Image (cartoon, rainbow, N blue to C red; front, top):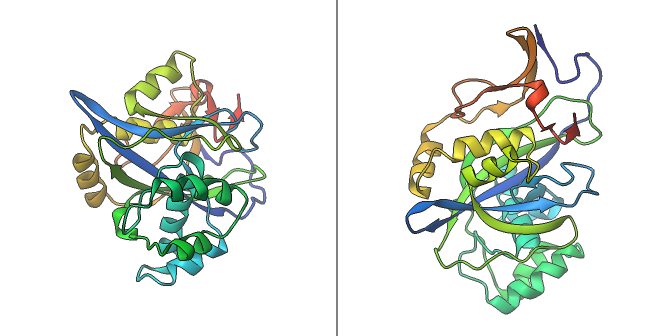
Length: 265
């Protein structure tokens, strides 16, 4: 049996374009750390879950991307990933020159207040370097939730002495650096909540002992849209994703998927 996420053929919402940034920070004698945020339990999507910084792509992202040579949708997604990471964590990455600490501190609340990113950049004379971001994956579920996101994932790396994140305290309640396997282990121990797409990406990211290894993998692995489906395997329903896209685990029993796309079991 190969079925959609609900088991029914019904009209689904139009996916919302979004972008997510996976940031590596190296540490001595240990796998690299990744920047993650813990979403507020009150959020409609992935409430209470550990995710990577990111969010929906807006019109201003497209306007900024128009000044770059990337394909429009790809360029706007990269701008959104940079903007959302700055807003949610106070980590500035993807800039042609490093912004000052004062600018970062002032930009975060202004982005929370929905001021255009282009205005903040123009005022400070800052430019983005979209090529710093490395395409990694694209996920778009096919279920009937009120919000469905078509999300492009990117990789980037900061220096070993990069600062600790500053949580936005609006959509998220905490933000921190942790190894991919550390987050998986915490989820298995019931200490944190991880949704299905994040789990699959953490398992893939845990394969790499450096950003260079992850980047090399990403640049040689095809990026097709990952749309999970439900299928009967070994007598029970599984949530599945395609083979051949770099993921070491491509199916999980539905009963063990702690939260599939933000939906409680």
